Image (cartoon, rainbow, N blue to C red; front, side):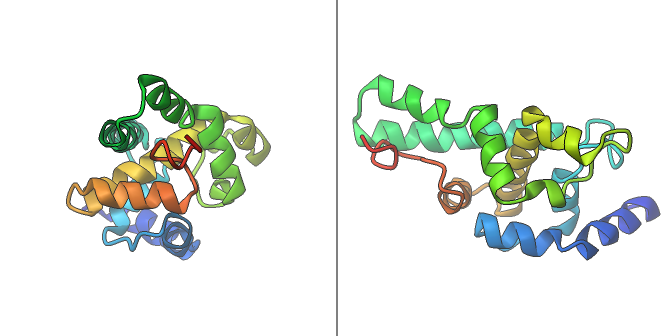
Length: 162
């Protein structure tokens, strides 16, 4: 790890990001560097910022929902509704409700108000944390499922009232 990322990681953790994530996502973080990457919406730490982790988190959340739907034997429409509950707008609303904006590193040219208005940025940060949890947990989908449940995001047809 280079000096820059060590300093940046220390800065991120000083802001209470780890405690915030552990409380709201119900997951004990092992890799602070991975968490710092997940919270980098600016691209300051890496060219893509948290986008790679967000893509992974999105797919792992979809895998959790799809597996739960399959095991339930519910009709296909149930799976579609569960996946729809993970839309950018819904994930951004969840991110706002847990004040995720307070621990995300944004592009310096973006005001906090602009960041709050960006559903895509907030949804990406939440998904990136899910991706980080997946990697940090040793590729454990149950850890992702537990995080989704901790955030009250439906993961099975019964969670969605079906």
